[in-house]
Each structure stands twice: as C-alpha cells, then as structure tokens.
Length: 533
Image (tube, rainbow, N blue to C red; front, side, top):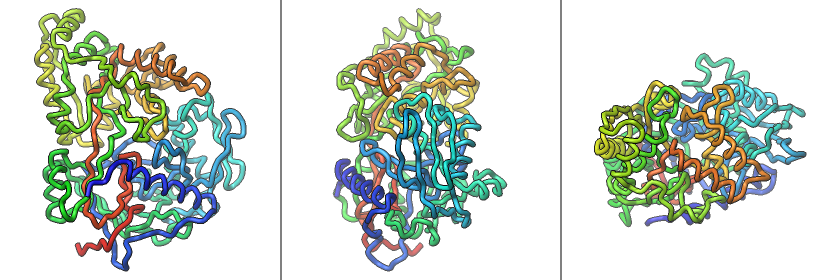
C-alpha cells in the first residue's frame, strides 16, 4: 500500500506533540514497539559509509543520517513547520534580544555511564566554534554562559532568523570526559547519550547499532527504542538494493531508483513512502579567483547548456520537477514557510545552446577548448547526472572529466579549491522552517577566509543574505532580492527537485521519516517484525 507524504507528516506531528510533552515532564504514551516479544532487527540499505562520526567537525549529511541513533542534540526538528522538539533540553526562553536560556534534563548519561551536564554542553558548542568548520550553523553564537548545572545561556549576535534553531539542532552533545578519553576524537569510537550504540562497524560494508538498555530516557516516553537492533548495509547500486529487498536482505531502502520502486507499488509484503526530497539538486561552481569559473559568464553558459528536464527523465524517471530556484516548490509539504510563489513558473536558465555559445564567446572561448573537472559522490544517480551534463557541455566546447568519490573523500575535496571546477551538490532549508537558512550554508562567507563554500567572495551577496536573514527585515522583498542575485550570478545552478522513494517491508507498519530524509526505525511501529539472521 502506498503511503502519502501527508500521512507521514501527520504521524510526525503526533510524535512531535508526544516528544514535547515528555521532555517537559507531561504524560506521553508508552512505546508501541513491535506488538510482540520477538527480537526486532531492522536492516536498512544505505548508499554510502559516513567515513567518520566526528561530532564537532564539518557537516556531513550521510553521517547525520545514522548518528541520530546514538548522538543526541538539545533539540531536533522532525517537521520544519512544527519547529523545535526538546530532546536533551526540557525547554528554552528568549530572555532578551539575542539571549536564549536553555534548560536540560538533570539525569542525562552517555553510554559509558558519564553524567552529562551544562558544562558538557558548553564544551561541545565551544569546541565546534573553535574548530571553525560550522560557521554557517554556529557563526552567530557569540558566547555561551553556564548558569548552573542544568541551565545555559546562548548569546546569539546578530540575532538572525533561524540562528538559535540552527545552533541547538546542529550540535551533538557528548560527555567531555568520555570524548577526551577517545583516541580518535570519536571518529571511529563514538559514545553518545542516545538510545543505541555502535556494536560493529565494517567500513564500506555495514554498521550495526544495538539498543542501549541503560538509556537515560528509557522511562520518559520518548518512544524511540522500538527495535532492538539496526543494521545499515552500504549498497551503492540501486539495482542491487532492489534485489536485496526482493530476497529479504533488507527491510528498508533509502536509495531505490524511481523505476525500481515502481515494481513494489501495491505489491504484497511491501509498502512505499513517497516524499518530496527537501534538498534541491544543484551544480555548484568553484568561484575561487584562481579557477576558470570565477568568471560569471562561463557559469551562465553552463547553466544555459544543460537541459534539466532530460536529467529529471533520464535519472529520476520524471518523478519530481525542474527546479526554478534553491527550494522545492511544494510549500504545502510543510518543508518551508517563506517560498515565493512567483518563482514556481520562472525558469532562470531555460535550455538554450546558442545562448550558451554566445556567453562562451563573451568569456573568451569562442571555439570552446575548455577542460574542466566535475566532482560528484560515487552513487548511481550522481554518476548518471554527471554523464548527462558531460554530454551537454561537450556541445559548447567544454570537455568534462568526471571525478566520483566515496562520501568521506567527497566531503574532504569539496573544501579544497584545487580539487575540482564544478560539483554536484544539494541545497536544503537546513533544519529550520525557512529556506534561506539553508542557502546560508552555501553562501555565507567565512569570517576568517572571507569566502563561502563555493570559494566565492561577494560583498553584495553577503549584504543581501544578511538582510534576508535579519529577523526585522526578513520578508518577501528581501528574500526575492537575494534570490534574483543568486540566479543572476549563477554560482549555484538548481536543476531538479525530486521525490524520495522509500521502499520497506510491510511489517514496518508506520515508518517514521523526518523531514522527508531520515528514517527513524527506533520510532517506527512494527507488526511482529522479527529476523533470524
């Protein structure tokens, strides 16, 4: 039976209410579990290994997908429109402009048995700030004051839209004592406060999580230990994922192609959840002054030379749409609150080969002869997209070398301006109800380097971004002005928004998928789901 996005969002809304009540000490229903005494193991097909579980370093979306089982944060966002759900925190208040007082539970313990207090929260946030790799989520945190053992003040300056939400949902909280005892900085031996722990990790193959029987919030009604074991198998090829589903090798699959997912529609024993993918698929350009794409005319030429409709059909079987901006045009999905409706029908760079050739000539390449490196994650959809882009750019005289890397290397190389010329990436609303908070991750200039993650230094862009992010000046006009400038300068080219096709066995009765991205088997409902492997 096919489940709709609205059905899943309705379930998440109910869970948010339950979690909020539990965190504040109110009543909450007991975990539903699997309805039996069977040992419940869930096997997930994931596309790639996260590479590491460093809690304080640069953001890594693959790492975050699985670290939710053992790392916890002050708050989580399960549905952007519903806002913050307390986890380690019991609540917060804005006591004055830019000053947020957060209280935490007084009985938090990590898997090693260490008590976690406000001083540990301060250590974690201060370490992230010191590392300087998350300025786009923590850049406005000016200082952090411990009020008492279970109360902290977070001072946000400037007090920008979504800055507090990003801070409290972006930082994994761990025990300072346990962390400092680690020989790897938790890269390969993470210890968190969450409901599960890593029991086995075979890099590149699989990772297994077991229920923490001494979980500090076991009796608080969080409803987040509904299975005993979670195994993630890293399977890059979607066709192999479909085989694993068919043969009972996995119970839930992230990376099933649209075409393969169709084979499971209305099929006995399986269910499908289709959600709008919160991240817009983009080409990002290396705008460093040493790179050829520091020239906006060349960036615009590339944008005109690509037919996004062909990518949508060839890679995603037509499921989704052509992106017209850096946000999905589906505000009714509950993903964003500040989408401007007029963008839905405005295509900034319609496919036009002749226009692309004219811009190439203006940029000093009338006969082509340009060689560039396109970087992407080593996954089927990105390899296929890269090959389509390679063919289109050949039409205007640009020879493309495709560089595909597994996730850990990709995350490293994207920070190196010498490693690539353009790359495939995603832009999301980034754990807030406001899409431009996601744009900030890509466009905000690091105060130390003066550049953003696209190696771009543009004072006008920064000014427009700051205005749109300011709580007092955030409106349709400031957001539209920022959007128009982004499209004009073309450092990011959005080409598709897509659907996620999550296929699962039907004994997972209610799969919980937060923000259309992350599967929480530990919060899902099962019907006599037992495995013997």
